[in-house]
Every structure is written in C-alpha cells, then in structure tokens.
Image 1: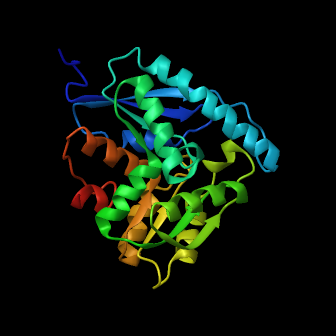
Image 2: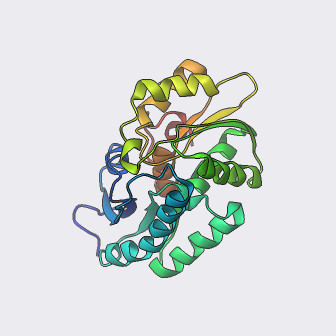
Length: 247
C-alpha cells in the first residue's frame, strides 16, 4: 500500500540541524507524488575555524548520523539522501563508499552520498578536469580534493571560502558564489563542482551553466537527481540545469 501523498516515493534527507539550505533546495526539485522528509543531526558547534574544533565538529556529525537515520526510518522511507557535507568525502573514494554501505545496512535501503552523486554526474558529462568550490577550511578542502583525485578526476583549481561557523555557510551571498564560479572557470576545466550542502548554490549553478557553456554542478540538486534516478524515476525539468534535463 502506497502513501496517499507520496504514492511514488518517500525520500528521506539527513541534514545538520544548523543547515537551512538542503531542505528548500530539495523541495524545489520534488516531483508530484514524491515527498521529502527531513531528519536532523544536532549541531551545537560554534567556530570551526580552528583545526581541532573542525575535527571535533566532523566527528560529532558522523556520530549523530546513525541516530538521525534511526528516527527517520520509523517512517516508510524509500531512499535516503545524505544532505551533509564533508562526511560523504571523508576517507577518500573507497573509505566514503564503505561508510555509505554501513549506513545502507542500518537503514536497509539505498543511500545517496553527495560525493558519489557528483562523480556519477561528472561521468555523465564526460568531464575529467574539474574546478571545485567549497565552504570549508583548508583541512576540509584537502579531504574533498583527495576524494575527487581518487575518483579519477584532475582538480585544476579549488577555492575554499573558509566559513568560520556552520551557520555562516548558508549566509554566503549569491553574488559571492557567482564571483567564485567565475574565478574558478577557465578553458582548462571541463566542469565546475560545488560542495558543502549549506551553500545556497542551486540557482547560481543553473545561471552559470548558461553563461559559461559547461556543466556547473551544485551538490544538493545533483544528490536529488541521483536519488530520483536510483529510484527509477525519470522526471526531467530545467530547475537543476542540464543534469536533470539531459540525463
């Protein structure tokens, strides 16, 4: 028996409690008959500018994901999106895959990691040399770069915005994001990728693709695309740029 509202699918989305971007960006892409349901990992972290504080924040987030899944899976969820940032890149390409498999074993359903969704999208476009935008401190940037390199991509440039607190990430102005994309762009890159789920990048990425003539992949729409396609739903629209329209 299907849900009356979510008769096509119920998608669960795990997000940090401080994150105000993932939910609206996923809701903007929700097709009729599919519903989104949010599970939050409690985040009480202040500054993450100090390396020790940053590592403590990442560890607390990682520990809290299991509890958020346990709570969310009391509903009839068909697929999970991990709407967290650095945790889906931690451990490199193979290490992140093992962590995703652990979460799938707990949830007993498929889980989309933003990291793997971005890799799948880049491969759809045939991109090999990329530029990356993050909200992270240098330690987080290194984790992201290692992941993409282990996945087989050459990272030509990486720009970290060095947001000092988790809540600062969602406050980065879209003008700053657009300027950052322009700074990262060049004839030597096939695609531009944005990570950090709290950055409100979705509309900037769509506009940048039109201006630059190459894929600009924001992590939240890319994750939602991956979840829909994994569930077997082929809904297409222009709200997530070329990815949702072409693949």
